[in-house]
Image 1: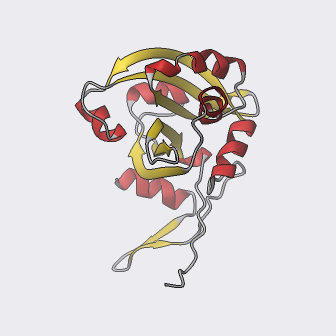
Image 2: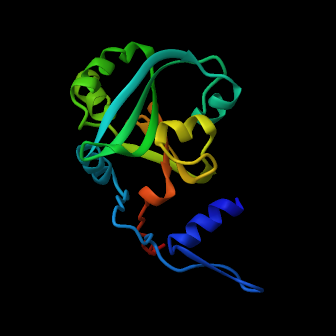
Image 3: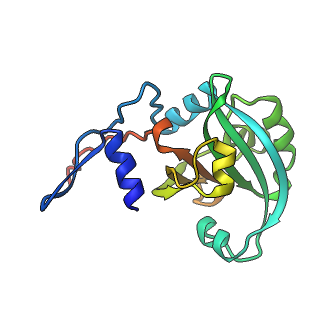
Length: 199
């Protein structure tokens, strides 16, 4: 966690003062490349601008840890689509790594996703199976990049990163896709707009 805070400080997001704690200084890091996500439309735009390079597809059974992340029963089977996200075709600088988990019966989506790397998998599911996004539940946490993930993202092990878990829900509130993304801190930011409610 100290390393993650140090990285955020280096990016100009927070400042740390003795006896004063940590203070948020900016909503955006001091970097030239700062994609931001704040809405479903932003996700679609992100998909169009940051190509998906599929690395593998496989059917897996959720172990205890993964079941906790995906909010499902242990042993639930998923089709996992693992991809690198790159900036405008620049494969030398991955923006992040994403594992998408969908029901095995959606297997045909994997081939389409490979053929259309600029489209979100959720859009492809909607087009083929009629499941449209009514809501996205998103969780964000600071993590340190593991040795395996560091090789994928071409960063040093222990680099600060954001892990974003998104659950895509249909109109009935049922989850039809879950994605787990890891983005190195220096290559990604999330912007949010909060409004005071009238109630």
